[in-house]
Every structure is written in C-alpha cells, then in structure tokens.
Length: 106
Image 1 (cartoon, one colour):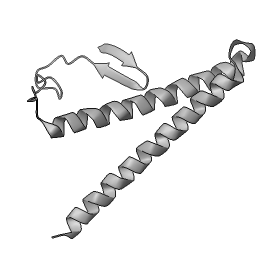
Image 2 (cartoon, rainbow, N blue to C red; image 1 turned 90 degrees about the vertical axis):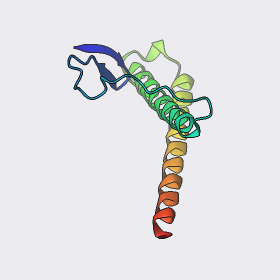
Image 3 (cartoon, rainbow, N blue to C red; image 1 turned 135 degrees about the horizontal axis):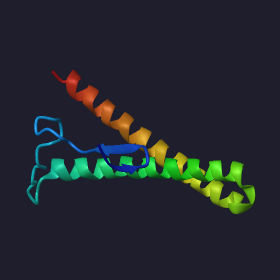
Image 4 (cartoon, rainbow, N blue to C red; image 1 turned 45 degrees about the vertical axis):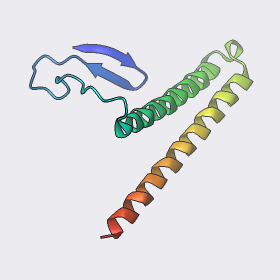
C-alpha cells in the first residue's frame, strides 16, 4: 500500500513488523554530530532532487504549452539544478577521497 509520493521517492506502508523500516526512529541526542550531519546531507540531496524535478517539469511544460511558461524561468530552474548537482558531485568526490585516504593510512 502506497503511503505518499514525493518527486521520485515513493514511501510504502509496512504491513509486517519484520519489514525493513518498521522499527521506530532512533531518538538522537542534542549533541549527536553524526546524526545532524547525516540529516543535513540527506536534506541537501533531497533538495537537489527537488530542483532537478522542478527543472524537468518546467522543461516539459515549455514543450507542451510554450505560452504558459517564460523561457527565463526555465533557464533559471535549469541552472539552479545544474549548479546544485555539480556541488553534490563535488561533495561526493571529496567524501570518497577522504575515505580513500583513511583506508590508505593503515
């Protein structure tokens, strides 16, 4: 049973307590740096996905109904999505390089 749909993310209801994700969320402490970093990173990736979806929908709207959307809106949305994706890739590459350096320290 589908619970909600947001962009390309589909959340499903669990029907059995043994299903993955059925356990309650872990409550984090106020000073939990790892949790807050993970939440921040997850939020940034979600925002990047939202920008990509918005740009794609504006491009499709531009093709189907050209008079309903301004070309400047499409270009701005596309550039925002492109910059956000580039930044996300740079952060990913930096994290992978840091991980490789830590592995090589052994």
